[in-house]
Picture (spheres, helix red, strand yellow):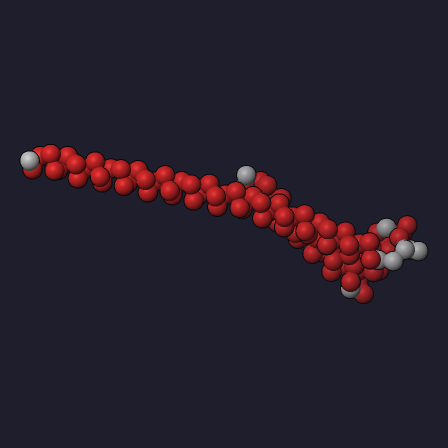
Length: 99
C-alpha cells in the first residue's frame, strides 16, 4: 500500500513538471531539444499529458486514501465496541458480586 502512495506522489510531481515545462519559455527549448520530432507540433500535447498524469496520480491517491480512512474507521468502531463490551461485562460481574 505504501508503494502505491509513493507512486501517486511521483505521478503528481511528474505531471507538474510536464505542465511547467510545457507552459514556460525555458521548457519549449528543452522539449524541442529532447524531442526534435515535436518541432512542427504545438506544445499543448505536453501540457495536456502533464495534466492527465497529475489527474491519474491524484485519483489513485484519493481512492487509496479513502480506503485507508474507511479501514481505520472500521477498526476504531470495533475497538469501541470491544471496550463497551468489556466495560458492560465488568459492570455485570460487579453487580453479581454485590448481590
